[in-house]
Length: 166
Image 1 (cartoon, helix red, strand yellow):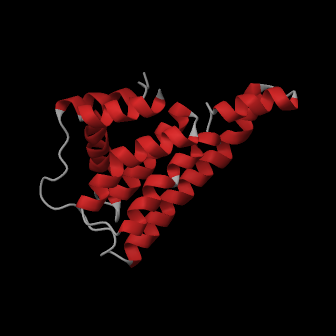
Image 2 (cartoon, rainbow, N blue to C red):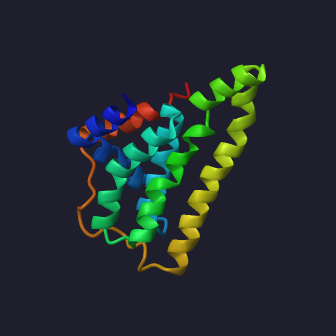
């Protein structure tokens, strides 16, 4: 079902809009598009909790955009694959629920214990992309022109990702 969800996001264009909106937030950073892809991968990993589904969705949504923007294939594929693997660690991971049952532990305790390492790994992926893009700007160029421009639908989806503070 999660793979189907990723394909629907890709085919409908909502996924591209989501990447475009996240890129708008990160465009001033070196490798901003890859950082946006890593952030989306972290969000998708937390939403699905399954590694295969997270990587498939992230690859379908971000890899073509990264490659068409001129990103080096090694950086693009790593950016598409690495954050998706966080699906096993960042809560609401299915694996943590299974492990809690097998270990006789509280699911909430395992979720709490896995949250910090998962977010730390996601941060390390983003820092790696940032440093790599700073030292090798040709490997992570800024997209040219209006190759990435979000639609109104993408802006609505982006607003839905972040809860209201008031």
